Length: 123
Image (cartoon, rainbow, N blue to C red; front, side, top):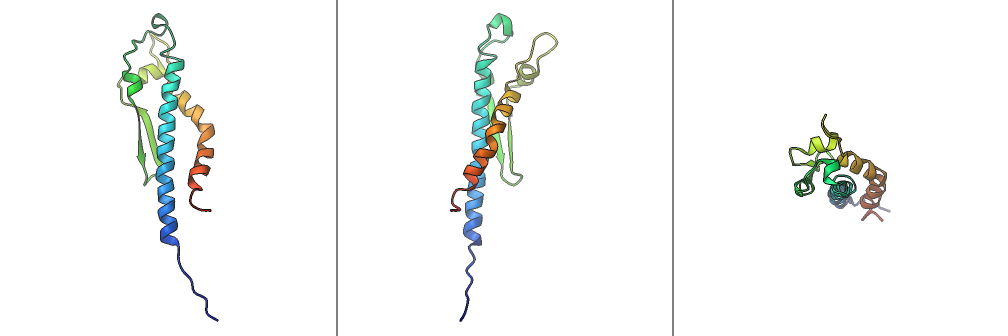
């Protein structure tokens, strides 16, 4: 009687890397969506006289994410230079922490999404 071994390593690695890319992209999309939602709740919902911010749409359009597959990293943020002042405020105006709120709101779902996406193809 002989036993033969066939390695599925290449197929498993291919599926794993595909799932990893899908997961990190989903995290980035989810964060940017939540950040815009947080803006709608805070900055864009408050009357201009109260918030002190003009509503040009640049801050909403500036939400971005970058995926780094090698480091298992999703960099999230805003490309608009004044986003940090909106987030943290200044001594003249209060902050509207849309980025922190978006991350905190998404944190509860991040693990669930990871389990769902990383398990695909391994039935």
